Image 1 (cartoon, rainbow, N blue to C red):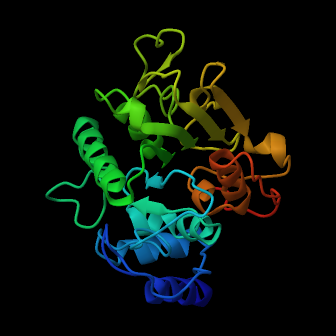
Image 2: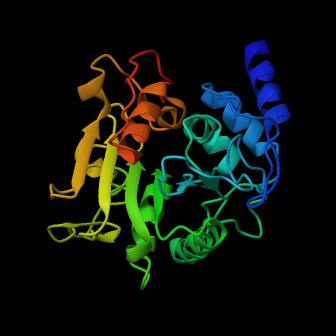
Length: 280
């Protein structure tokens, strides 16, 4: 418990300002949190506008000319609780990283992704406009965890938005529902080439990361996309056979972080570490 409190306190001390226009609390390297429980605790204690380390920085320039990366958190989360690992990891690698807390309701306090998906989709579409205007970028890349992966795909169905997105990296996304639960049965499978979140677009590159130990999006087939020239499905256990990373653990896993970084910049892949991950 003491370790958890110390880790959460360290993250709270490290975080900076609001959604757009934050300044770096310190120069890179930004502090990275691999303790998913500490990240969750710290995130829920701060306002929803609190950026994770390395995200939403003023005057960010990627020296490799890569597209800005927008991180989309999952259900009942916010930008700090979800991205205390991945945001600083990508920023330390030179990416320009942006995040927001989307999908808040009048009763959800500082927790997001609880609103209707159509509202969240519009909110994220507007955030893409803001990031493009701020950076001058023609396109952005999206990384979404869980519901965030669904929103990333849904926003491509908004007229004009598919042309503004180069790559979508889904992490434990419900491409065919969350589970085969009898409480939420599917009435019919989606058409071939289309998941639960609408059709895929040929001009977008999709990289889909899934775990056989995911206890929310299961069975594994629910997390996978149909094969296509622009689709890559990666099962964590195919890279690290002894991994036990679960649904929540994916967002603070160094294994997953390296796979995300390689997906965003295939020309500069990084070694993928295999180690202990949070099994839930």
